[in-house]
Each structure stands twice: as structure tokens, then as C-alpha cells.
Amino acid sequence: MSLHFTDPTSFKIPAIISALIIGVLMLLLTTQWIGEQDRIVKVPEHIAARIVQVNKPKPKTAPVKKAVKKKPKPKPIKPKTQPKPKPVPKKVEKAEPKAVKQDKPAKPLPLPGTDFLDALEEEETQMANDRAAKEAEQAKQAEYEQEQEASFISQVRALIGAAWRLPPSAKHSDELELRIYLVPTGEVTEVVLLKSSGNDALDRSAQQAVWRVGVLPVPQDAVLFEKNFRQFVLTLRPENARL
Image (cartoon, rainbow, N blue to C red):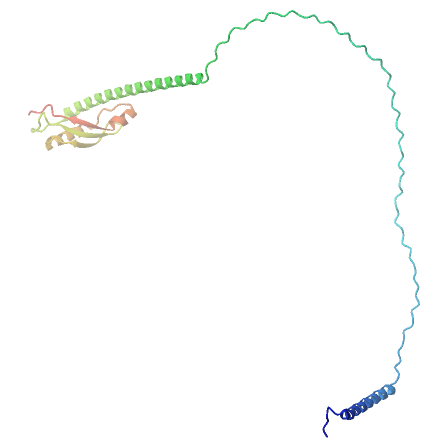
């Protein structure tokens, strides 16, 4: 049989069935509740108690001392003094004006910088004098050295001339130059030919003459020796040649 939603009688049957099912369920539930035994619930006895109030000890406080007011000391009474009498002003006699002496006119002050200019001029004069004295000392020293060198050269030439053995081919016009090296004792250490005379025999004979002498006179002044005589150039001419 089919249900029609438009027919109101078609909803009655399902409604009746659902009501029956609900009624059966309710009946079953009520029978189970009735069959169960009653449960005994023990209630705990009440504990009898009362509130006891405990008094806490109060903290001891130090006794407060009362401030004792000091009585003010009586002020000493000063004795009354009588006022001093005022001094009577003395009459001052007017002094006659004295004659003022006129000062002599002061000397004019020097212009600024005068002392500096004088000191500068004096310093320049002193420097010029020192320079002149130094130049004079140098000129004197140079003159002394020239004299010593001339004396030394003349002695060396005399010694070498005495020991010089001229070859037969030597001429008066021949000239040669030697560089001679010495030690402070005057001993000859080296002889070098700087300028040849053109005659080999004459050149060799001049060198041999220097070695033949061996020791030459030197000044005692060590500074002068180092400056002018440690090594020197000697010019020789065969003045005793035959030609």
C-alpha cells in the first residue's frame, strides 16, 4: 500500500506505531528502577568543636621620658653708662701756600730699539774682528807650511841628486815627475812615475836614486806630515848631465 502525502489519513498509522514503541520503552525502564535495592548512604557524624581565642603577648614598649624644661637663666643687668662728652673741634689755622720748586727738564728718553741696535753693531764688530784674526792665523799657518815644504823639498833634491846616477843620454832639458810615499819615520814605501822625461833610462835612474836614499827627512809636526808629506810630488831635472 503506498502513502500519499496529500491524504491526511496516511500519517495516522506511523504515529500510532511510534507511540507504542515509546510506551514499551518507558515500561521497561520503570520496572528496572523499582527492582533495584535501596542503597545505604552513611552520613559522617558531626565533629563537636569550639573556637578558643588565644591572647597574643603584647610587645613591651620602653617608657617615654618626659622632657624636663630648663628654666632660662636671668640675664645680667648692665649698668647704665653716662654718655661721653663730644670733643670740641679745634680751630685749624690755614697755612700759607709754599712756593713750589720747578723741576729741571728731564733728559729725553732713548728711542725704542736703540739698545738692540747697539748690541747688534757690537756683535757684528766682534764677528769681524774674529774673522780677521782667524784669517791672519790661517795665513800665518799657510806661510809656515810653505816654508817647511820648501825646506823639505830642497833637502830631498839634494839627497836624491847625490845618489842619482845619470845615464849618458841624459840632457839638461829633460824633466820628470815622481810621486813619493812615506811613513812618519821618513822611510820610502812607494815611488810612482807621474810624468816621463821621454828617456826611459833617465826615468829608471831617478826612481832608483830615491830607493837608494831610502829615508827622507820629515817634520816633527804629525799634522803637518799627514797634510803635506805623507805623499808628495817631486820634479827632477838632470842639472849635472853632459848634454
